[in-house]
Image 1 (cartoon, rainbow, N blue to C red):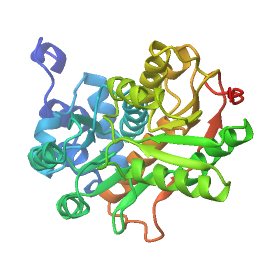
Image 2: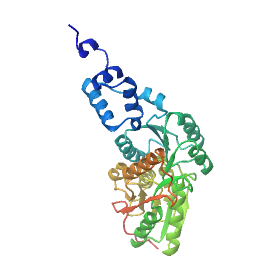
Image 3: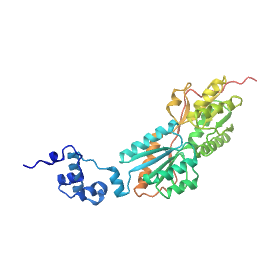
Length: 342
C-alpha cells in the first residue's frame, strides 16, 4: 500500500513538485504561476495558489528575484532617522508598499549629500525603485539616480522627476498671518540646512508674506535641524527684538522654546514660537507647539504609490509635483504680543 503525499513528505517543507502534483500541472507551470503570473491563465494560476495553500507551500522570494530580476523591494532614503517626521512618512510608505506586496529598505543618510549618493549607488541593485525624502543631493545627482531606477522625491520639487511636496507657501503664509494677527510686527525665521529645498521654500514664503503684510522679517541661521540646533538658535534670539519666531521644524522649535526659557524668557509671554510638522514632541512640550501641519503619513503613502506606478511602467507626471495641503494648528506657544516697556 502506497503512502499518501503528506506521509511521503514527512516533516520536510513542501516543494513546487508537491504543488504540481496537488494541482495536476507541471512544475514549470507552478514556477511561472509564482514568478510570472501573467504567463499563466487565471484559472490555472488560481488552482496552483489553492494547492499551495492547502499543502503549506511558500514561494521563495530570493529564488523569484533571481529568476525574474524583480526583488519587490523599495529603498527609502531619509536624511535623519532621529527626526520624528520620518517615522510618520515611513509608516505611510510602509503601509502602501505592504499593500502592494513590496518590502521597504530604509537607509539613514545623516544629512550628508555624499553619504546619500553613495548609499543610493550601493543599494540600487537590490531594489526596484527609490524614494528620496528631503534629499540633500544636487539636482544632477538625483537625476543620475533616476536614470538607473524609478525615483520619487518627497519634500522637494525638481523638474523631470516625480515629486510630492507640502504646500509650503500657503502653510508658511498662514503662520506669518497668525503672528501678525496677534500683534507681532518684528518676526524671525530660524533656518534649517541650506541644502534643504524645504528650508529655501519656507524662507522665501516667509519673506514674501512679511513684505506683503508690512512686517519686519529677518533670517537667522542656518542651524542643524535638531533640538540642539534650535537651542543654539535661542541664544541668538534671546538678545533680538523679534517677538514672533517661525522655526524650520518641530525638533528645532522645541529646542528654541527650551533655550528661550533657560534664558529667562517666557513663551509665549515674551516670544511666540511657531514650528512645522505636527509630531508628538510638539504636542507634549510645555507650552504645546503651535505648528504648520501636513498629513505626513498620507504624503509617505502617496509618494510610495506613485513610485510603484513608475516601477510598473507609468510615465512621470509632466504637470509638476503633487502638492499636499498644509494647515496651521494654533496651540500654546503663540499668543498676543507683550507690551514693550519704553
